[in-house]
Image 1 (tube, one colour):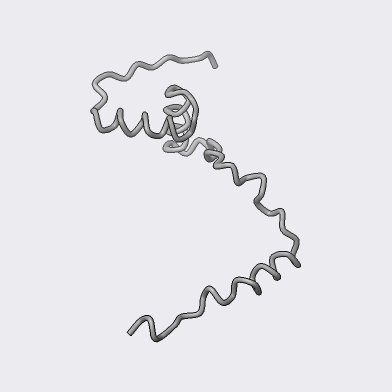
Image 2 (tube, rainbow, N blue to C red):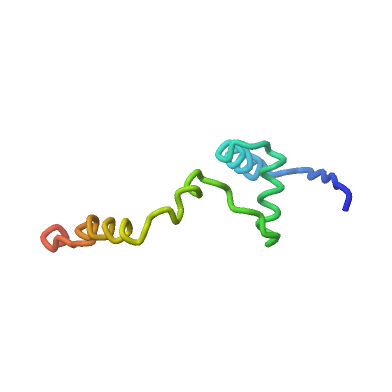
Length: 84
């Protein structure tokens, strides 16, 4: 398939501003941002934006996860006195 060019006219100001914010957040060109968003919206399997955590996902061993869960279990405790 050959490359296609697309011109979109009369973009509402709010949409243009939202696209610019997303472009800055992603740190890529506006063109790339629009292509990524269109592909995702159309279910074409575009990879999700890499927020920098992808390399960390799934790197804990089962023992490390168990230790983390033990160490943070107290965070789910509710202090009834605070909720009266």
